[in-house]
Image (cartoon, rainbow, N blue to C red; front, side, top):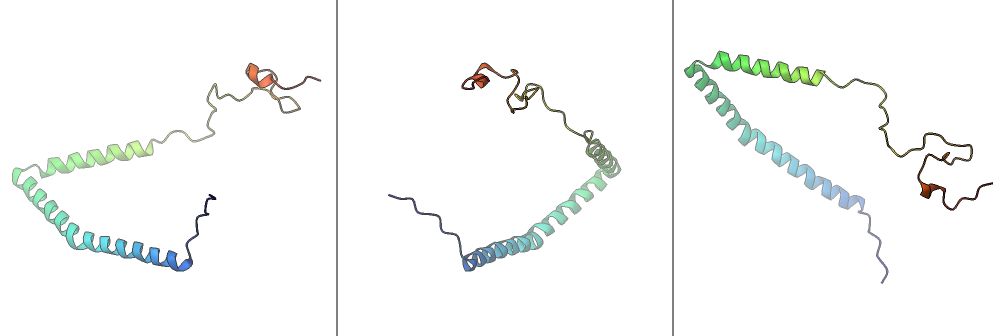
Length: 117
């Protein structure tokens, strides 16, 4: 039994599949705009009213600003840029002779099967 090659999809099939994807993305967009966004806004409003009632709104704003500044500082402290150093013990020979073979820095198995001239 010979294996059958996978058939490549036709342009019409690809267009049909893309139409399904676009339709699903559109449905998700509608769901977010019509259902989730109003809930999020109402919850934000309720939370803000609660903080105002308990007198903790200013404290919460200061806390959020501090957290934002800390996060911004972490993002800005990126590792130094430049060439990366090769890790030690990477298995590459330290020296290579003219014929392209290592100069004896490899394991015993590397030298098997070669004749010396």
